[in-house]
Image (cartoon, rainbow, N blue to C red; front, side, top):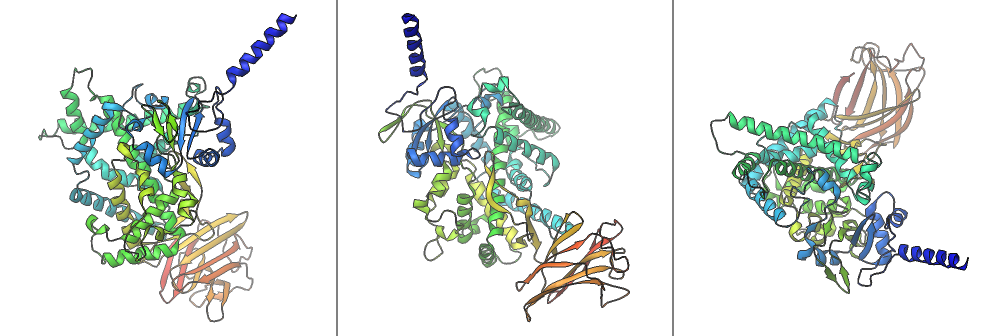
Length: 631
């Protein structure tokens, strides 16, 4: 009996010792690493929604270099600019961590220019940049023509869409992402996609899904072996479905390039795809060649994803912050109008004069957390840092969020303040080193950084020259609670609107709750605004609510009216409308009110839900807005 008892004690003690996390004194400090689960529990308790915030909270306890275990992966988390700069500029830190999803998406191989290492990565990246340059990439004159053309198409698209919707332009990040991709794709494939194209929107949506599934907080990354047993739980099925769609899309481009070239009398390659196909032919039969059709498929996926996601997200954040900060919008527009006269083309060379805009973009990059956790690197050898050693093979995670929101350095990181990047005279951009590292550091710097800056500044300059950015009253978008994918995307930006400067258009938002219509109107007019149904789309026979703000008496007013045969309107005997608020700011009049859909007053009120009635909008004041009818 004693023997059995001692045996149980020995076995129990052995299990405890086996399961007890082992401490390596040369490792950076961090929470105890538990077998099988690592530090998933600690990170979830710190912040279950945003992994980058969990890193920040744990780093407050363990320091700017922290050792953790992300599921089955040993990792070191870097949370300070000083540590990031020292560690990630070293040669052993230039590797990319190869998660299983990397090979899942690439024919079970390590291919492409984002998720690859060593000689193949260096040679392929160099080859890609060199040959894209042959078609204009990085060349000022060529890039300027391509960006100007694409931005011009984008402005036409925004104006047409805005006018079709009576001044309201829904913010669709895919339109911007697709437009930016066109700049790159004119060099890659020799053609562009129509802005708003549904196929491109679908592919970009698949790109978002890929980024979401492979983000740091996903179980697919933390416990990759589970994907084989639980494909739905790990979202592996969605990941592979999206990559299959991406690959079919890319294969279609390659086949199109082959077909067009075969029917063309000129044999010379006219885009990057054709150049790469030539390289494949030259290396046919060479088993060690990097140049294969599978490689081309993955490289094109990398270029499309990299070219669309970051810049499209950045433009979306830019519009959001400009909308939320009207004084910044005024300063930006004044600067653009001062540097570029009306109708003058915006050139890359002159963009450097837009110092306030560049400072604003740095602040957008800082506050937008566009790359809160960049693609992970890997320690190719042991890396020393202070008294610690980062072991070979460790995952290197960088918390850009902490670097760009460190209160000790930024003082007021939660305040949107572009002036922090300007000198005292306001004429020189300064203090940009930390934000600049969102594009990478060391040899892993984003090869499209220059394109991002030029495109961002030109898009915003033209948007500000052509539009006023505003929001629908009562539905203001927010920079809080962003959507976490590979990048952080703002929520509710579709509530941002464009108001055409020249046309004096209305922005109308109508929502229904039970049997009551809630209407908010912003009109570029000083005076009253009106809203109501009409059977013929004319004043005669219309049932119109007129509201506004009187600056003399400093009171707001509203009235339910009926037009019999001609103006003036007749005041209804029964008033079935309730004013919520009205205001005037010198250029615009804003009103908000409620009205029952069907008041029951059949003599003077028209039921709004009847399809035969056409809604009317009208404003009248210093700048007269004409009657406009819309079903």
